[in-house]
Image (cartoon, rainbow, N blue to C red):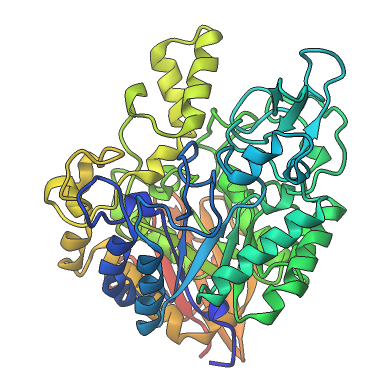
Length: 545
């Protein structure tokens, strides 16, 4: 395989530390727990671990509200534990990527505490504005977590901006001091041996103007701060000042990114970006509503991104999304659909991102009760729906459609108490009751399991330059069939997927093809002169001969 960077040829595995492995029995995952599972991750074929935030935090948003950028959350361990994680992972050929959350800090960060004095040098670290008149915020922008995006500070008669919770005040990226502070943070971790950063909401850090936003049913004001020129200038500077001097990778979380801006972000700013179009395929304008007619949009968004940008960060779930097998797969044909989705994830052009538990087919938790909620968005949304006189049952169902807690239930390691995640059954989020069926131990013992299939797929991809480096070319098919070619060095692979639980007849162009099946989620599947696809059937076919 020709020379390529680790982040291009490797596979990323995302860990949500609170929910991965608990070493000390407090019901919360930790860094020693992660270390204890490194051999498992190596056996899976992972080369990069992305950790959701491990910094000190008051947990208003479970780590995405940082109170110290150069420390480790005591719930997770110590800096010595983190250094040991880097060392032990590297022994196994695995590098560590951290979460970089610099759109905002916690309101308990020392910078913000000091900023509430208008004469403090830290006042400029945040975005403070006067209101147009008493009791009225500076503009009509709304927060991602509901309500106005401004909080009043009576001591100084000013409002501060928070695009998320009021406990997550936005940093002022017009300040040279903020840029210098962030560069210091980046060097601190890169010098410790970190391989790079997943950059949280990185396409909204620069606020171009503070005019009112156009009214929308969801999130007012985004046109004033998403993907502005100042944003690109800042990322170009961070790249030139810091990232260009290290062997590292950067991937941006870029909400509502378009192709033009994605290409700009990937031209001397970031290595990859996460697009959200695919994750919105089953949603309508207001995301509490979902549709079952997602197949056509799902295919189109994936294909468009494969064709429009040179390299994709490919993912089907993460800590902010519901489980992919529950969204795009099937409960009754669980294993087949999970394997089909795995085939898709690991054969598209770009770097695959596997989220913890995805490799064993973890599903959404059965309907959460309100008392079980942890995600702060749930409480706001439930309360809002009740104000509109929705019943308790309706509120729970609508919140369920976008509840991030689904992805954050504890990792299912075995069929013992707390699914082997912890010796404490009082885990911070409840364990999914299906853990006795879907867990690592059971699936490792079953050669036909979802986990076994992931291992075969990863092994195939890692040894096949066509799947790593090949170009992407789609075949136009009806919405239930997803078909595309991967081409490289005179070789051609064909990927064929049935996205539904129904048998579908193949078009003539496919029925006349000849090729060798490299991998299928059906035992002994053939391809040459194939007439139909069975429910959720997937095939990777070599057409080179």
